[in-house]
Length: 35
Length: 237
Image 1 (cartoon, rainbow over the protein chains, first blue to last red):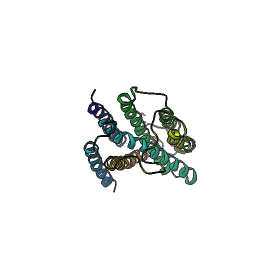
Image 2: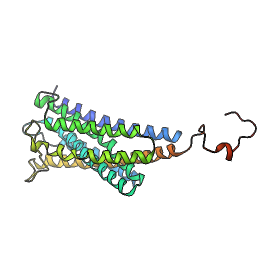
Image 3: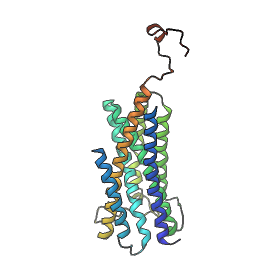
Image 4: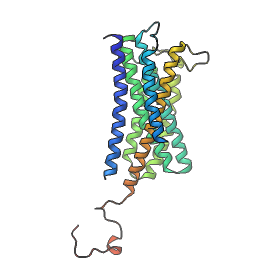
């Protein structure tokens, strides 16, 4: 893999995980509000 | 205020992303060094988050206010996310530069241990019934767990290993060129704002969960209900 490929891999892990965590917080908040 | 922080966090992450891509390549590592613009902020936030857990834990034991417990727990959860990201990005960087995904270097092993210790902290919280008891025991755990933070940070100084010693936080001048340092500090600032925004959201969620757990459930028998609130009309339950 090229250097830029490794960089893209790392960045996608980081920003993907952060987006997933924000989404999970919103989903948990919706679930709590619904109960 | 909270909304403003979230907007500022999103904007600064975008700027940091652009700054990381626009910075010149490193003289030795080339473009691979750009991974540092997400790895270093993640590692910094692991320290910050678990430090805030320590502060929240001590403050809870002193004041017995659950708000401090929520801060400690929320910060620990966000800290686990960033510690996991620091481990993952370090591993991704290690493969092309060191030739291995993982090595038994002191910094790597101690960071992984810290990750698992705070996972245990979160698991402990889920296993204890009662907000007060959970907060008290978690606070003690949060204080003891924080002892490892300086050990993780100084491990690269105390033990010789593959992981490089501090580049920015060192007694003499930072050993990094200004354009690269600027991109790195931008990323640290942006990720710190993201941390503040995430902890704020997580604390709101924790407060809502506490309210929900304290409220009696509709199908729950309340002690004395048969005496104080007799059912009329033979309503089936």
